[in-house]
Length: 339
Image (cartoon, rainbow, N blue to C red; front, side):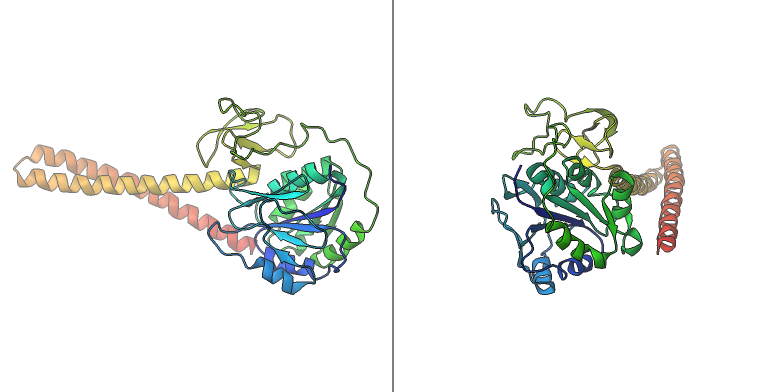
């Protein structure tokens, strides 16, 4: 493991302002590098390096592949690239998404745990769902420090709440106290190294995207079959029994924590309903045309059969429309309560 120190930070919704509040409290002589993952749209342009550079006194940038990690700098994952650490250097990849995201917080946190061990401080800030929980657990297994924004202080508390529920967190702090706490922690002696077994922190997919335990391309991802399928590619999802937090991965490398998997399954179900509705309405439209054609050609029996198909398709479509409407109404009610 590397003898230096790094701070790895993960954020999602509400994360830009939260990150600004953290970095503005950090001094120019900070004895560690900051590496940040903020969930971004894959084809967007990110102004986050410029925003954070203006907010504090540390230089910030999107790193390049193989760039050496230096203390007193901020490295931010670029859009559509995982940010990982190996041998004291930064590695960028388009490996499979995790929790529906690329970049994903878990990738950065896991690789930092492997590379820096007790020299890592992991921070989970505001955001939805549970990206960062599995990675923060890896940091703790390797002797690092875990800091989580107080959910009561977060614009979107789900990511902090998930981390607190599943990881033995060292500090739960309001946003205003995280920057000073980082500075104080990093000026203390680095804790003694701990033994972090090869099986304690999941290995990353290689440069070709091949998942751990599937090096020959013919096996499965590591673990046991979960009986679930990957929402991204339809392959089997595998899990390690008894692992906490629970974590799923498919043979192509897509990975999910439970809340993120539930959310993606809900999206897939919604998409399937709309596709079924479209098919039913197209079926009714085609049956109407065929019924008219049969009537015009003096074939009332065929026309009646097509009219029956119209009635059945319209009836099923009406049921689906009602279900979709109810689903939207429930979602809107949940959002009103959460707000």
